[in-house]
Image (cartoon, rainbow, N blue to C red; front, side, top):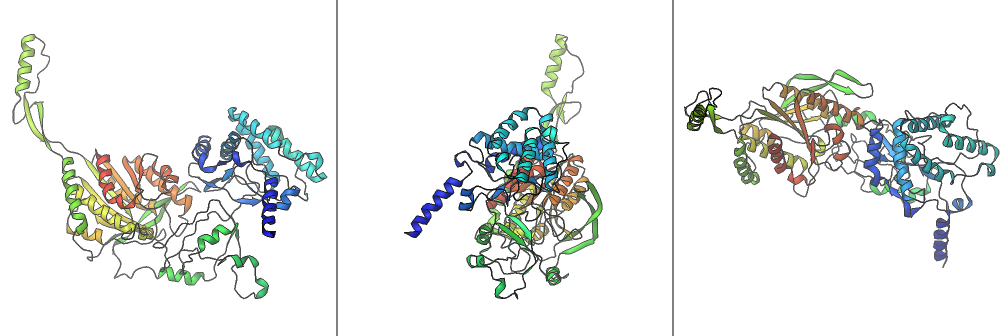
Length: 616
């Protein structure tokens, strides 16, 4: 009976205290595309990802029912940082669905105008008021949308006359900034210290955006401490707030006991992919139970670094290194500067250890592809009306004599025909991602690296029948000083046992510094004399490495490398199996220069088909 009554009370008080309109809610996924277009159309940076925002406590005055129900103490507000534009996961603060959708678009537009995070709440008022005035002044069409949102929001704010003195003054300032943002820009009045903060303003950006806890993605390290074969992505439906704490030493005794730990199996999970830790199968459920993610730095940094360095293969087991390394530049988007000789690329070739035979299960497909691609091979065709040739062109002779008798002949036409080759001047370089993430399984039988290997085999067999010039390379990296560039087939190498041996010998390793690999591949293609040059990239994820080459830094450098390739007249195209590629590949390669293979096992056949389409 007590449980039944308690449930009735909880449902009743929750319903009465709710400030949301569930029937009119709009989800971020519904407006992700138009909001992104609005942000970029108004001058927002194209490299920013659109993500869900974090709930944060607002510390504003709450009503009696809200306090009794223990809710309405957090709010999702929009903000932006160096890598992301964060909008609420759901908006249901207005009774009309159209207004909730307009709020998403307004916040995206406002974020494109606001520069930098506020340092205090007074600057927050000035920044948002100034941005609102600038936005309406530059785009008068948004004024109608803003007035509708403003009227709906002011109706929900508390009456200043019913608040204590300090809160009344703060609320009056807020209402003035919202109602007439242009006039408030020059105001220097500060918000007064008060017992409660003003009610949040959903029409503005966050006054104190979180600075840590950027992602709720948890990557579990594999048994070798390198990540890859057992990598799992854990993405909650909403972003969590983050905090940086000291790692517990486990010696604090009973006084350090936390009651909430009874309901979770663990409070701390290792997320550093360079450390050797047992994988925690319950990490996903733990993340979903927490509203705040606490991040600490382990004290055993030197030992962790030692373990990772020992992960490098011995010199007699590693691929053969050709030369001392090639210095390459890298784009630093923060400084908007190309860093000369920032990376060092090591050209490698596999030792004589691979199997020189084509895998038996690929042979039938390889023969079929070879016959199909032979149709693309340059053929001998008869060309008529030539000035010289191997035989007379009877049609041209008859036509000339007829024109002469009619008096319409204008010039001496060619009277010969000849059989000549129709050449296709094309060079293609395939660059395959061989990072450790390719050790992940596609199904029970194959890994990503296996389907990449099969794709390279079938691609080589198919192009061997066309006579086109092509080269095959793989790449991975471990820091900017060690970008590994594996030679599988150079342009002048004949297709045969050596090429198959090198393809069979590829294996997963390290990370994905894509920009350096693309720059060197561009240099190799630039040496070709072909009229058309094509760079095909195979990858299973976004650019990343151990140092700064994460997130937006790696994406911006890869985009800069692709643009350099285009300026040299080289076409680049990306084939990926990453289901999240739509968030970053259009920005790197363009919306029509990449293809997503949803079923990774289809990649071996999709690669030759892609080449046939691009080469036609």
